Length: 67
Image 1: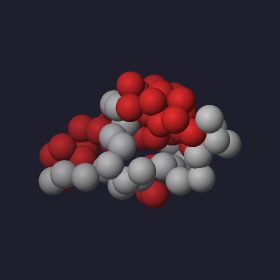
Image 2: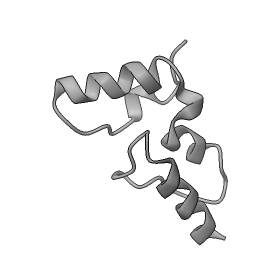
Image 3: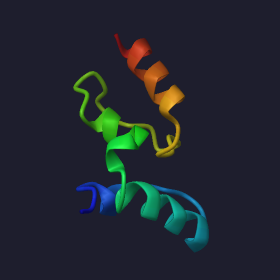
Image 4: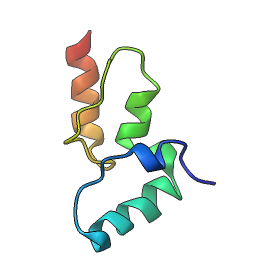
């Protein structure tokens, strides 16, 4: 299965780095993706473009600061 947000995700980098993130998160364990998990929260209006799928700590901080 593939993440429903795969085509909208602004993963930066060249094709190699971007492809690594896509395989691990978009096409694999998207439930572990920081961006996906933030999208489930109604506390944030917009997910920052700088947030990468592996930035769980930063995602948690964003949620804490949003309350």
